[in-house]
Length: 187
Image (cartoon, rainbow, N blue to C red):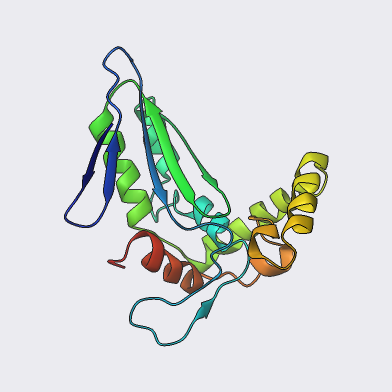
């Protein structure tokens, strides 16, 4: 494995596999479901975000003002996805062609967000349906039940998707703050 830290602080890890025909790339950040309370640089007070905001960002970062990053990946034959855990969120793709173009798409959509009232409201509905779907999933409920009993009162016991009430509090302004703090400090 080759590790390099770029001038902007981005740590890059490469695992060359010359015999492979497909390339996988992931942009992961130390920002997950438990990170709802933090103190941004240059701010004297703690910020408290609604539960589920990291997961909400996972969904919203793919969408730009004039296009969707999934469409750009699809045009090159790449497959893209993302996931949010308790302590991190990752955006990824796999491709067998046009690696540079797909890397540019990945870096662009993660580091240059676009949020509007209209798109955030639409996403609330989508994530609300996802939350309700998980309420019908015995495995999901069992997992969070066990975690809640192991770590009562700790943020890790909260569902990374949030609740219907918590995601109702998410606005474009609230999304830009953790994005600027955890993902792209230039914002």
